Image (cartoon, rainbow, N blue to C red; front, top):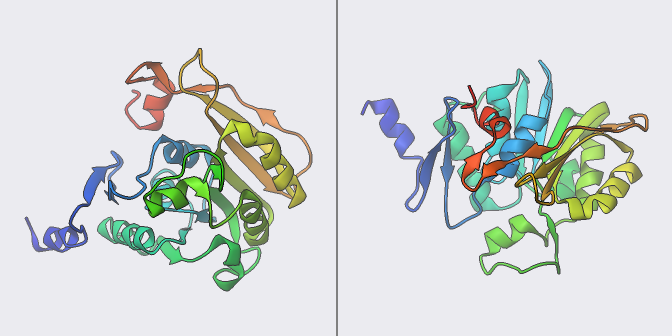
Length: 253
């Protein structure tokens, strides 16, 4: 092991693991906290960051979405905003492990207080994999880090929509992944903030099951008209991804 690799290894703390993203980058993960899942991969694949654009990821967690966007787009710069100190610290170390400090910043802060960190209309794209459950919906987790990631205990979706509208420039795009059962209130919150839903895709675990995720693109100041794209099916059978998902993960050839 050379000296540079030895220095990189010091970024990994006891209890953490290193995940190979199969695109030249690696992620530091802690199984005791909230690890990224397929929803983050789907969001990064669904989002469109154009050449030279600046993108901001709310609720970035381990920083998976900014790192995936750096790998797949020609965006100029990527920022992750995360309220939990341990997650933000781990995200920064993943950025450093991959040598991406020039392209990715991790900001520790509250999505409800974006005015403290970012000027208005300073990004062309915003992404978010938010907490899916309202504070009193579903089973809460005894692990606080996981509970914050899954439940709206620190912010609501209305807070997120408000923050996205503030930091996006006119014509900027907001991308999110969420649960279909909240689709009506999500659409309402977006439109209330001038974020017009323009593109939607439902994600099904199996072809004969109900959708369990929805991907959305909304445009700040966009005109009313939405395109519903073909459904995305995750599994052919238990444990076996469909070709569409294998392509997203980079092994569908």
